[in-house]
Length: 234
Ligand SMILES: [Zn+2]
Ligand SMILES: [Zn+2]
Image: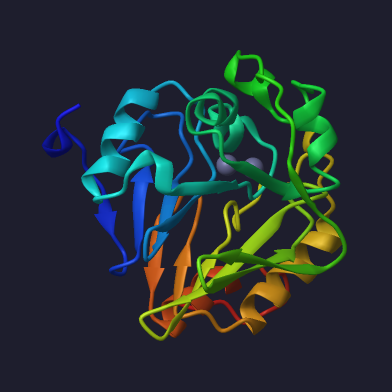
């Protein structure tokens, strides 16, 4: 495949957006690529409707597919995970998700993963590394990515926090919700998780559907929009 066919959005010299509405398919949530000196990870995988485009986009960042060591799943919803099975078959990389999210993916639960909302079926797959408890550290090369449990939108939602170019980068897909019984959402947990995300004081927020926010104030203002009872930014 011609590397020049791919497109990606550079966020830092190590972090790119490689999937999402403008980049792969209209149903895809954002897909991010982290490249720490030849040790790479994807954050989420989209629906899987446009895998060829995704691969071209990854290659356009100068990454070889063999360098992708893991897919970090933020939560089980189809717009983030429908593409994981096919991508894993191709990349043979490790799949990371929270232990409370894994059963819905391993058993292919079309309701809780919201696949039914898309008129689709989730392709089940195994989760190799199940995050349990509130926090865990994932090594990528000689760098660290923190996985932090942030339930609410779904029971096992995870946000991933790392550093790049001296800035704190937060991958927090679906900060905006929604809260819905099909998704086993919990409003109280969601509000607590939003405050947790705010307290991380990230410099860059990579969101699932609203794109990338740069600068501590812009990140905080976006998160605050969804916190009940807090003074809203104008
Ligand atoms: Zn979701
Ligand atoms: Zn989503």
